[in-house]
Length: 256
Image (tube, rainbow, N blue to C red; front, top):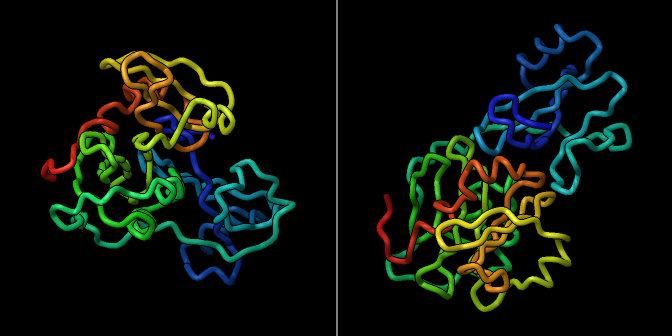
């Protein structure tokens, strides 16, 4: 399902009940106007931050989607009831805390891989990989930079500043973390995208994963970018393959 504003993929975040045990009178009031419908599916756009609500059919079972492996089009009738969730911004985060100056300890790639675009938020990022060394405000969101083994090519995480939801994770291929064989095993056939700024961009469209190569040698993987599943390739191209978000910061560069 696509966002009605920017056509980016929507992520199902949960289903809110309209029944009497709902803790908000506003949900109950909405339910009064929807007849037999028992709740609303809550979808969040990771690109523009828009929230969309869709009424649940009376025969469907209300659920709470907390497992990212459950697809938005899952058969709700086969799932069991869980407590509804609330979608709220993380309270009052105005300034991103940075790590101590001079701390360039490389970030654990295994921990970065646990940060999931469209699912993880800022609190989870801090919990898994700590504070960044730099932060940049871009038109596409807030960029956090984390040191890698290469001081000129850090890892980066792009966040939606409205809900602090992760939009992209770009991991520098230091110490040979990725190669063509294991990317192919995980994501299947790559599809050629474009050449830009002296690099090649290849994408595994169905998985929201792209690799950026050094020069035009497709075996010299420089970065691997992770997005929400089903990122549309046209959208990826419109955003210039997220080149600025992947390459703009270096260790020691001051926060903006």
